[in-house]
Image (cartoon, rainbow, N blue to C red; front, top):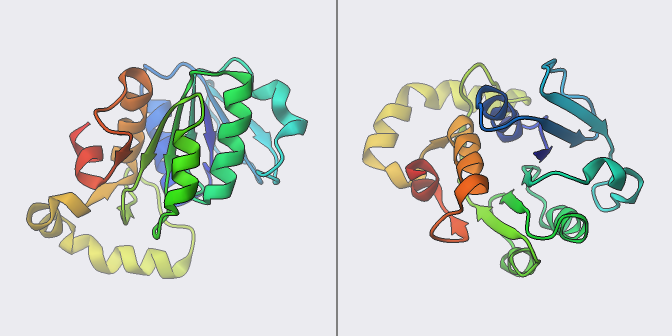
Amino acid sequence: MILFGAAGTVGRGVLRACLLDDRVTAVLAVGPAPTGVVHDRLREIVHADLLDLTPIEAGLRGHDACFFCPGEPEHAYAAGETLARLTPGSAFVYVSAGGADGAAEDALLALPLRAYVFRPGPARPAGGVTARTGLHRLAYIVVRPLYPVLRRVFPATATTAGQIGRAMITVAERGAPRRVLGPADINAL
């Protein structure tokens, strides 16, 4: 399984979920910097230009799933296009950022992949994962006590990075009823 964006808050939660799940036998993390995580099932490729994966294509071959967490639609499409050429029919799950670009998502979904788009909304870090920026960390500290209430009152808008990761694994393994999934869909998987 390939994971793009393992350094971000959601990506780190997805990486943790993958390393804890026995269904995932190996993770290849691709990003502009090392994750800092050491695990026997984790291998990394440091590569900054997500619009041009040509230099690392050999390392991307042979994977049956790709999780794309950076959020930029043009980067997701470039990765999807490369993987569709290298491993057509493999699973590709894209975590879309807020203000989703429908045209870019549609183009990604049209590739010869088992592609899905996750639109989780704000995702709370969990399992020891913390936000990288001070402003996001402060926001999570302020909202943390309210999260159980928000989850009960607005279950369709509240999810965690770990839930996103577990849902991505499930979707890669057996698919989902829809190709574009919101927080309630993600939580139900």
